[in-house]
Length: 318
Image (cartoon, rainbow, N blue to C red):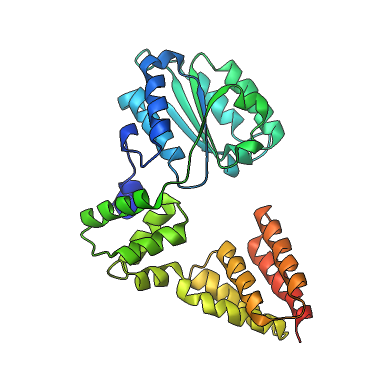
């Protein structure tokens, strides 16, 4: 059984540009560029997760390269290869290997999470983009376009993807539900959208996870997403404030590793729980949570940081 048979996000990934969910203006602009493929510029796709950036890049590769797309497309993830050597060697080898097949207009290099590259790595990439322009087109993908250096932005046609509206996400989930012969109700699908926050990839993954429990109902969605364990975060906070740091940490690890609660959700829920305590140190506690949230977003080990957070919360107890 292939990965696409197992993962619905791959099984139902569009293969044609016209199948992309929402993003109609971007699709129209891309189709105009395709009318003269030899003059197509490098592309920079920006926007939040799960809005179709990588999918559109792959659709473009299929459309332009046809049956040669696999051999003539290089996919890299910059977050896996940070720094000055973020895969530049791979890019150089690919762009120069065996020249250019006469059956295709150029090779395509898809670089996901390009905004995770250091400034030095981006400068090196800019030089490679210039040196290989005759035989390669780059499609750069970024969540935060402000982290892409101006010299790269100026060499690309920039497309900013918008969050997919709820009605479009729900419609797409309904179509998948029909094909998978699932029973779903409006409240269940609405709960998936709310929890995924417009991230279609996350929504499809949550739909598949919920299907393993039965019908797509609000209750099953909450169970699948770990939302029924939100109240347990209140318990973690109480244990920490009572000075029971080991118990608090064990409960926190259980929520994340056993029930699948994300670190960001844990912080969100513990922040909400603080306001229920009427603790006299409310302001200090909230600032402490924000401090550890920032550290995790900056790349620090999440388990270590959350454990340190719980340890620091003990000083605000009664």
